Length: 106
Image (cartoon, rainbow, N blue to C red; front, top):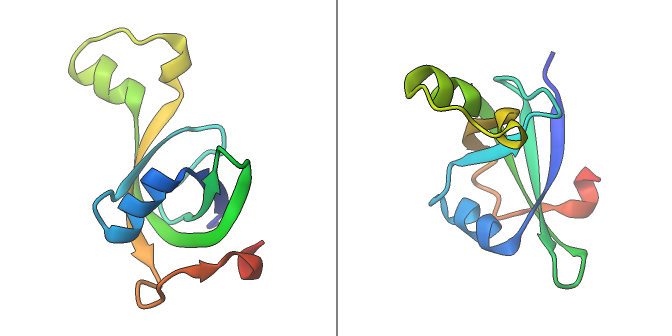
């Protein structure tokens, strides 16, 4: 079953995602992200503590645990705060649309 996850994204990261420079997310896996799930990245300004009204949609192509990469590949012990994080490879959905209207996806 595909889930949709709505996430705050700070303006500098949002801009890189919008331009296609950044095609991944690193997040705590407290939402049990799965391949095929949808991410809605909502631009959020930490200075004003408000959403800007812009959002981008992505499909998760793969989910890799940080622990698996560092512990299994390089045999490095990680602090417990980092163990639950994952790297998600993403592909943009609806790339022909400039930005999604945040009010339509709330």
